[in-house]
Length: 405
Image (tube, rainbow, N blue to C red; front, side, top):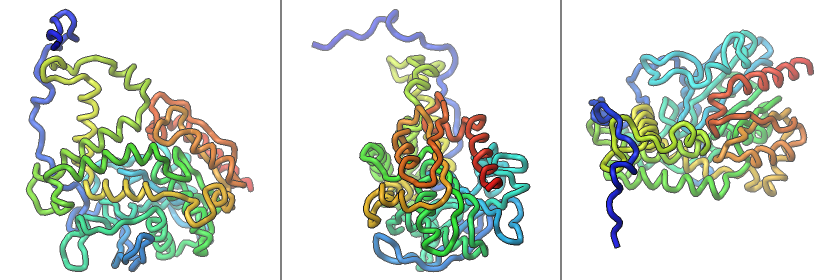
């Protein structure tokens, strides 16, 4: 038996005003990847050669986009490597403008007088291999003169670090005072702690924030529908969409992928207390309208589709799924036991993507690790991008202890 429609008194009140979706929006580009000929902005570039990939095959003519702040000491002792998360890039500090679609993503952490003080440290931030902001990735030109697109090979976290090792050599750096990163960046930090010394590059200290030593089944499960949403978009075209007009790229699939991911980046408590069951202004969820939280996710999906690339989202997400520090090293605990760098591990207490237990395992098994530090936050995984009043002093203290040593 079909239940009757809800009475007007049982519906959430519709708000006055026009439907928020009715406002005209600019067309969505097929890709927001940085491509040759675009404004360079603050980027620098290094050509680091050809790489044999862990999953097989070779990737020729790899170029890395990166940015730097501060001055390298004559003895090279003050270099800090900052590694970004999934949809970040090399633009850690600085305004949006020509060449940069958004402002720096960690400005509270890096700069003069900041926890990572550029008056004392020389900071390097590369765009990751497979990314879309200047480093070789799916939007880059392949040897045949066309974009790699769907032909871009599978890469792993270790491949990404191998490229960053060659960048380090190209910059004439033989030692990192600190390698720091959160989320996907934290995966690379852990690989750096092992691969760096194996490659003859000293890694004195590492800071692993809201990350893990091994991708979990739960994280793989959340990633699966994100990748599927992009590939199922009819406008994805197998990854070959770089020459199509605006609004004809895979922005719908990319936006849905971001919505799925964003729900894991925030905490259930925050979403419930911030939005609850409120309708979006001017919309009725009992007809064709949305709840406020749905509008919030739509906004973040649209926002990412205007500053990122669908292929890079797939390539980087799949690279995260390969992450297993213990692969070919006798298991995770054995691999963590090989890390000799001073180690700071930070978790967010409400993180439901990278659980605090994942971080606790790192802190327990790395011989030189300090006790686990917790950020107390209502914001879940995104706490590492928000709770600077807590994270800043932790990093400041960690670097001050290095100076004392």
